[in-house]
Amino acid sequence: MYQNYTIGQTEFVLNYNYDLPKNHIARLISAFVDSIPQEVLLEESVAATGRPASHPAIMLKILLFAYSRQTYSGRKIEMMLDESLPMRWLAHDYTYSYHTINNFRSSQHASNLIKRAFVYFTMALTDHGLIQNDAVFIDGTKVEADANKYSFTWRRAVEKYHAKLREKTSKIYEELVEKRVVQEMAPELVTSAEGMKTMEQELGEQITKLDEEIEQEPKIIKGGSVRKRRRRFLKKLRHQLSNDLIPRAQKYEHAEDIFQGRNSYSKTDHDATFMCMKEDPMMNRELKPGYNLQIATHKQFVLDYGLFSNPTDTRTLVPFLKQFHALGFFKHIVADAGYGSEYNYTTILDQFEKQPIIPYTTYQKEQKRKFKNDPTNSQNWQYNAEDDYYIDHLGVRFSFYRYSEQIDKYGFKRDFKIYRADKHQPSAQLDKLAKTPGGRQRYMKVNPTWNYYKAKVKATLSSDEGKAIYRRRKFDVEPVFGHMKRDFGIRRTHLRGQRAVENDIGLALMTLNITKLGQLINRWRAN
View 1 (cartoon, rainbow, N blue to C red):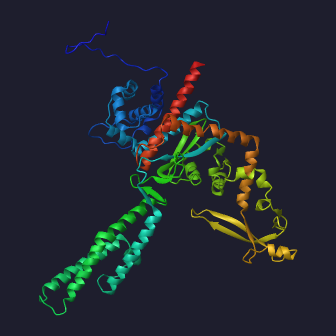
View 2: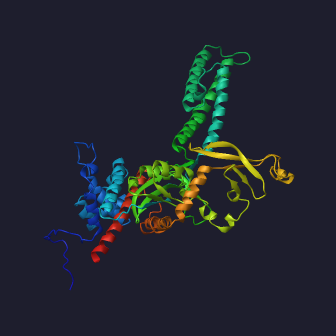
View 3: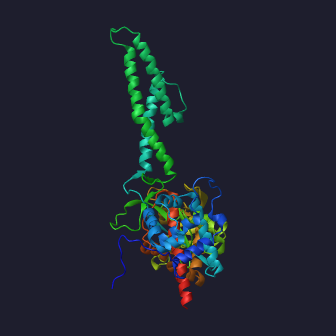
């Protein structure tokens, strides 16, 4: 027996109310989004006329559910609104075009809403006792941008060719001033695109004036017309300015505005920076356009995230902690050795008043017996605190010489103590050893502040509490990236631009949180 199947006949269709299982993730997504206050969900100013705007709560629900099903294309999400029963349940049978979906998840309102969603999710975890106040774990990973990997623009190349262009333009300007073709300008204006346009306009006025004078000349002039030669010269320079120098100057100035301190950017995604990716099958450190994703986790829940353009983690920690909304909940900040620096330790202890459990780069190396027994290492030299001098493994004495300070390119100041080998050592042999091969006295540099932080970190990581907390980092923050890349397939962004990419990754991380919370709830119900 087959099911009833009729063609071309009138049918009487009954609409049944569809529902979802109680443990379905769509229900959890709906409950979470509905817990966000309406004043947060809705924009402050919305047009009073025209077609009603799509409700942000519905848009957020369908995006979170689509991401939970590893669907990131706007067209496919639009298709799910017609074909997926949970999606229709979340959208209340509304349909949206992929233009509406993509415009919403790339908007500033969606950016604010997603960030606030993490705040309310953290509050929900706190209310249910899923957050302890001991430590928050921070780590980063590189995410490849949705950009052509060969569309690079390098800052060094732009600076090099821009400098040559300025030099060439300055010579043309000096020649024109000498021949009284253009008026004098400020030096910084001469080599700019705006200054070149001014020169081009003045050249055009001089050529027009020469055209009028040449018309009044006789047709044949013995030895040729001086004005015609001058006109040819000026036309040549104007052509060079309009077709070569001005377009190149505009291109270089535009590129320098895009860099904003970075060393590179992609032509297809100006916010993406070329950096080494962890997934490198060829093992040749190929640079690809990407973003540096930083997250803060607790019990594998992502509490906050940030997207940065610099590839190193060291300079991202402080900006990320400044935007971290739940920093006051925790006593310790835990991260790997890539975040250990004097600036980070100083800021965490003095500004944030938290305890860092962050090893420095050489921490593991300094724990080895080979390092501790190396006599050439200045950290193993004999030190006399009373008279403030060192004695190296050869017996040469280094007395305090002077203080010094260094300011890096980011404006952070480091204080050093300089020790110089004494000119008069106990023996003539030591006098020779106190000098460099060039005949100068040897020096050594000590950073007391850095040594203090290193000792403090060693003591923390050697304690039972520090070891227990740092041990949790491996199974707290690192599995989140594995879950995001393996299960959700997010190894490359799906949108372009800093804000759009940040929204895209924020939706994925929030979906990961809700999925994990749903699994915990199902276990509790089963028990």
